[in-house]
Image: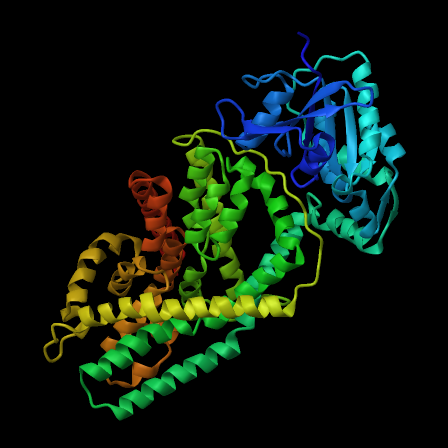
Length: 615
């Protein structure tokens, strides 16, 4: 018995492909899974005008014939006749979104190159016209070399014309499918844009401006320079805009501390409140303005539509380092916190791609490191201009973030050539429209970030700081002896100091490293608590923490401390979520080990280089 003609319906996700398939087949559908995979298989029957039945299969939405997910692999294998239990289609209906034509044509061109009898359904033309875009289907047909039918699948517009075109196509002799060879995606994208441009009859000013902006912001040379400039301005603003509110918070903390000192007699309770709570937690919350400024920029970039374009610009660089393009969003999330960033790797289908992303996510400079960076930079980097509108402090901050990203790319490259051998896959993405950020959404986002930071300060940081205060306060020192050196914390610090002494760290840093594993900001509160206890009741008790550091650390030590925090493992929460996402302790322990080695080597190299330069 001769099998029915098989027509595959293919296209990008969100092109209206399933709606068109439903309009063609109606209730004559079957749903199951492809053999050997959990990808859904939807098939149905179409009856042509002359009564001939046709079998249709709705293929999973794809961006390319170079698969980056199980869905895309099934689409490729079905089209090439490689899918187990599935014969190759006799014809193809490609569904493209009329309002996003240049992006959808890239995949359509790949499919047309297969040589199957093909029809292009130019879908959602009504939405395109609503947005001010009118296309000429005849021009598009001439450029593609296959029939193009305008459709609005959800309203069954164009369905009769599509059925008639299918009737004509299936009555013609069938050509064999060509064996697919990987296409040059850059060439296809360029051709897709040229074809889409030629097919435009009328376009609204908003869409014209979007294309003009994209031609600049996504330019292979100008685009990355603009992205670097945006990030540079962001880090300049972290210092320049926060100076006044930081001074207000510092003055308020000092005023509260002086009030508690005047109100309570000398003793453990006053020491707990002044040295433990205010000396530790107060040293961290002064950095709230810098964190809010950083997230202000992130929220504006996301809401405006630029953040996805930044992902597009970074994709080629990440692919060169062996990272999957799908890793960009998890790594971007890790700039806020590595925990949600690691959890976001669940969207990466390839196990080795996902594992590599998890292992390098802690190298993204999370917001918890910002208090450490700003403290050391404010204490040791002069607040002076190195050019028009360029501050040295912001320049150093920018360099630390670049160092973290560079470290992640190099670590990924090393991992992909050794224990997670392989190469990253390409990443196709839809570009959103440009729009003005809503003030309400930005304010809510900043409020949520402030609440998260203050809750963290009032829980993890407060608890760790109080524990460190207790360890640093007992046993009591003898007259003339340093309280910190006599305490339990001092003895623990002495043990750590023997390990970190070769890389230029002092005992103060040794005391901060262990509690910083609870949360990165605790390094600041730990140093603040230790110095507050050590100062006792002398005049230095209310001196700003950065002023205390200048008198006790060398510049070489400060730079080594910054280098350590660029690479050092993140908090216990990061280690815990890594264990959960990898189902065991093997990879968390590997991650902690290699990051500690990186941090130690980077800090040591920085310290000895600085010493050699006389710093």
